[in-house]
Amino acid sequence: MSAAVQQMFDRIAPTYDTVNRTLSAGIDQRWRRLAIASLRLTSGAERHGGLDPVGPVCIDLCAGTLDLTRMLVAAGARVQAVDFSCEMLQKGRLKLLPGTEDRVSILAADATALPLQGGLADGLVCGFGIRNVDRDRLGLALSEARRVLRPGGRLAVLEFFRPQRRLTRAAHWLYNRHVLPTVGGLISGDRDAYTYLVRSIEGFLSVEEFSARLSEAGFVGIEHRDLTLGIASLVTAQAPGGGT
Image: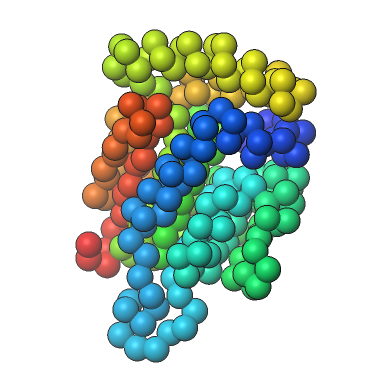
């Protein structure tokens, strides 16, 4: 990811959550809960057939201000939150509930070179961040995601993929060209940042193309579903091995 994009996210970190809640009318939080549920998290005891009080281990990739991290902790997981924007992570750290800090490790790193051991995680979730990976490095990021998952570990990606249906394309165009930069710019004071986000959505892959890239990276059991009339999509997959 480019330094310019990293700096842009650092700039908009203070107002990022407010913009998201305003633009989505809170629907984005429902999407995040669906992503967490799709990981099918189980306790350590269920996985290993014995007592294991630590719970499942999950990675929140492109974690931003830690909305998904908080939900994972509430689901009983220990979480490694990773993002390339230190300011976004710092904003998220302040949102962690008292008493949960010891279940979250925060790491500033690039999605294409994760400084994490292989087979670490039972689940990995990425919410609205994978499209910010440089297109020619997307394969690296997906390979890294597979590497850090245990055999049979699950992946969930929430994203604004490039729509294929004509009606959805028209709705995306209207929203992206008029609502997103206007509202995002007014709240954040940084219209350029939200103009970039429009370009990142319009220039990204379709959900079918992204699914094909996951298959190339070695993932299996790939599925996808549209959310709220196709505004966003949830793609799930599994690291090979470990059963279903």
